[in-house]
Length: 491
Image (tube, rainbow, N blue to C red; front, side, top):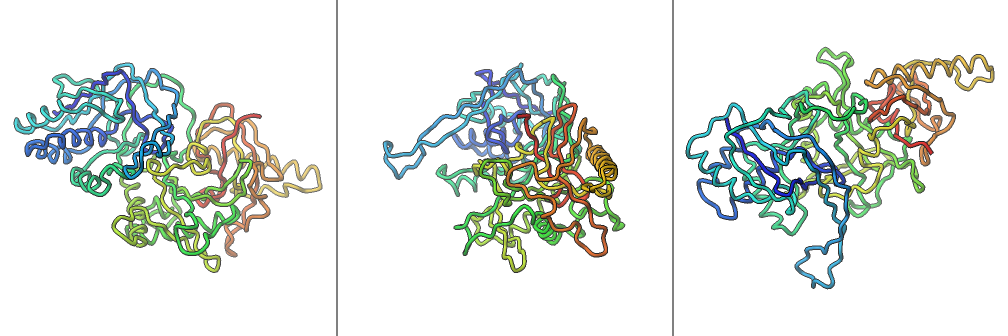
């Protein structure tokens, strides 16, 4: 067995979550520990240290022992000078930086490889290397690191069915870190190269968790390209074009995916039948709900089911990687601009958003704006009802009442289908409830094919007895940008 223990000398761990600058990372990711070991090694490089790191990167994801969190510091924004060596100190513009941190009940974690055995040479090299690590995460997060003789019960274990996504390392991680250092030389924004692995959280829950839908809040987001990133004016797409845009993106992913495309991407099983399990949802994100919202598409989110395995997600990442490789114009172009061709309208151009390098300040692009727990949810795009409820706006009061009752029941069943309870109240709305959103009648027919039954599109308000965590995607068009709901507070 191999174990590496980290003691937080100040009692706090200061590190930013990889996908949200406003949240703290917990538990510390194995890739962050490896980077700390690499940094310690290059302070005083030795052949034994390098050998130990190259050995460690091949041992797979560790189990993690960590305590529950007793508190999280309020997020503080500090304005610091830009580290621009070409300018004088007095002329440097101060930029905002945030420093989220957490206070675990026990100020330590252990990374454990239960089935790994070290040789005396590797053990001595790791023991010497860990003794020189002074921080993990931010420079204020001071630590003492050593190889412990006793190991506690793990709190997080690697698990393809897990719900906690952590950065880990694999063969070649040391070389990748070296290459990034040569490229950036600490003068440009840096992104930690890493793999992602799902973990199961076996730590006891201290508070009741909100009810969750079957869709994950860990999104892959592509933001609309700025005008100067490509030649000519940027193409904009209104929210009413969401389905067409989503279909083009889906076709691109299918084309670049490993063949045959996995069920997660295709939505069909091996025998060609529609999948009975949730699959990838492609959601164009509209500008809605704000005082200046105009309903235009800000970007596109790829939303996998929470239960999707690591192998299934790797197929998605491989498809995205191949698509980006086809558009890449240079070695340094890590996130090239991708054209989403819309026929005569031109190409809607997007670029994969990196939550660490990019400042995703637009609320409409941040998963938290769509997924936070709430009792009350409003439609951003209309819901395509799974069956026809009748004439919702009939002049005959009895027919109208019956149709509205049917529509409410259809939406209640749709909620159960995505893993959340039936709402305590459902209201079918005659107009879009959020600023910038379009009325249901302004959307093209769905699914739009002559050989398919055309769905009734409605806007709605849903109120749940308990807080529900999103994303909430409802109805027959939930995999192509329809039925997207936004959490809202009571006014």
